[in-house]
Amino acid sequence: RCLSDWSSDVCSSDLPFLPVFPGEFAVGPIDLDLLSISGEIRRWLVRRARSANGAVHAWVDAATGVPAFEYPEITGYALTFWAAQSIATEDELEAGQRAASWLGELVKSDRLHAREGWDSNAVYNFDLAMMANGLLAFGVRHQPEAVRTGIRLAAYLCDQIGRDGWLEPLDPDVSHRSSRSDWSTKGYVHLVKTAQCQLHAAALGLRDGVAAARAVVGRGLDFLTSDGRFVTQPGAEVTMLHSHLYGVEGLWVFAEATGDDEIRDAAQAATEWAWRQQLPSGGFPRWTAADSQTAAPEQFDVTAQAVRAAVLCGLAPEGLDRAVLRLTQCVLETPSGSALPYQPDTENTHENAWVSMFGAQAYESALAGVPRFDWTTLV
Image 1 (cartoon, helix red, strand yellow):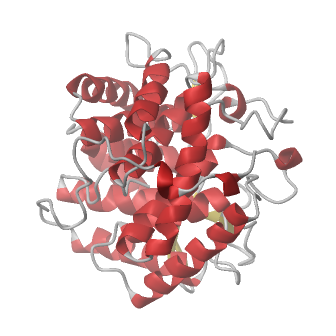
Image 2 (cartoon, one colour):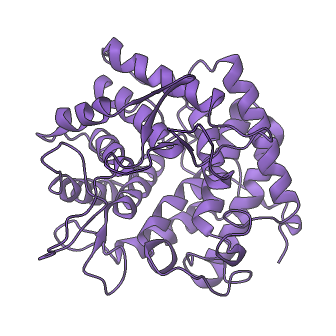
């Protein structure tokens, strides 16, 4: 199957209402120190985390300044992040235009694998969804030609959902196997977040986008237990909190876009469960398991996601301030802005792109008391 088969003439909006754009919601007082950190993260992303091609690197080695690989998924996140800024800087606009063009070339040439030469060039449907949403979000605001590419990707995923009833982690038509066996290849819950691009594309005219999103979310709810825990890997005792919180984010997006209060309640229950896993440090672990004798490493994408999720669901957990403080204590200062590490206690410290974007949204939202973005621009 080839993406060139898709075009935006498959459109007919069936979303109850269009997205709310930045600046259209009330904002509470912002602590200037944390707002400054958020601004430094924005500066780091455009000045230190980008490749010469316009892509965004997964991370930068803090000791050497050497960047990791160009990452299509995270480049999609960056487009969503830049689209969320009510006032984008000239650097961000230039960065977004180049990033959208880079992703557009990948889509045009059907180079959809997660990254060059990795995992037998497997194509991850989650990654395609994050690319699609970034192209749609940035395209609507700043680069109209990117919208068409985003809709093509969303339609490509919608076709799989219509055929199978849900999404597989790997595109079954081009990725017959993976060398990996974890939540991203065997689990399902993280795919609930892919509803974002389906709903976003539906708001822009994609036929059956809402139905596809509803199918994805419905399948995800099959893995939600009565205590609010998502089973992130079927048959496994371990719950991966990164995937669990992706599920929360997808539920929140669906509830915001459609007004579904039952889905909103499910997102809240899953968020409350996640906050029961908070570490004494204020951060959150990579995973949790009943009766495990092995301590999970602390991981900051999870901490930032937990902070965001609490604000999204209107919760004020007792440990919220400690989680924000923990992120603040571990900010990495660089010659070109600030970043957050992936894990605080590792031999090699990485200035991580997605953690930093999650963190910037977490800082501003926690301090405002409301999300500093709408459902289309949740990174």
